[in-house]
Image 1 (cartoon, helix red, strand yellow):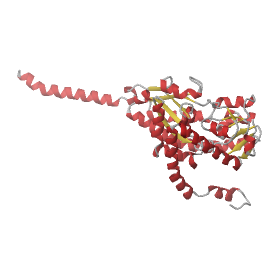
Image 2 (cartoon, one colour; image 1 turned 180 degrees about the vertical axis):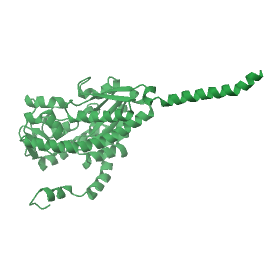
Image 3 (cartoon, helix red, strand yellow; image 1 turned 90 degrees about the vertical axis):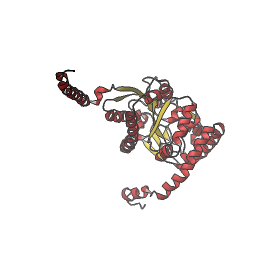
Image 4 (cartoon, helix red, strand yellow; image 1 turned 60 degrees about the vertical axis):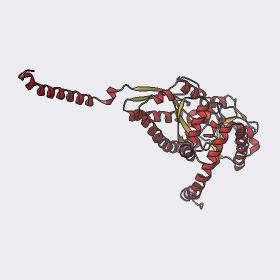
Length: 375
């Protein structure tokens, strides 16, 4: 090697390192979005586009899309865009859809145990307590086991505790248990069996078909969910009587589904974004529901809708009917029995705590807003 080569070698090595450093700095300066292709997922909800439930589904998607910064984009279509509402689980499993938004009770026909995430009194747990049982009391593992037994290759997130649902909309208000007998009634999940025990003829229609069926006289009464949904779907246009309070679906929540193959293919940071978006959406949905449901309740009253409290006799009859239904189902389905046992054990402990600790808020409300009446 010549003297010239020897003296130039250190300089060449310096220039090479400098060039490499500049290239690395340039790569770091390029936004992350440009270095990763956007993952687009097509979802469908089980709700009509005008329903507040579809809005909740879109709220979740927006949170994911915003936090993902362009790396993940979820598009949510309304019910029926790709498949009928009750076929959502199969469509997500097969990959026809990448995901969806609905309720677990809609899959009741595949395994009756699935309806226990929503139908019935849940041993006195409110919807937020049912979610607590799901995530911290063993419910999630049981749900995953049920889906696995059905060969459903999906990832399920539960969120969004729903306010207690009314008994429903009736062409004629009901005053006693006998008034339920012979009614053509719409409900879903295990509530189907409960209302059959009460003597009704049940038709489990999806949300978008209920009001047309009421209008045409195909059913005499129907339940759906809440003041906002009921108003948007047009219940007050065809029926003028709404019975408030019921145990048939007093602890329900929403479900967000992902096709497992699509979900597993996401990087860890996007899975974390989905996880935290579910939690954020659950809180946000709870707050929005209070605002919107209470306002729509006022609007329904302005529209001269007649609201009645469901008589205690009917509520007690629901509980008795529920006991008959779950005893029969538990004898037929081992998973059903295990879910019940898990819920009961959690409800006994959590319910005692909540009932003993929680003050009677109605006493305070009456004190301030029912003038002349003592709490």
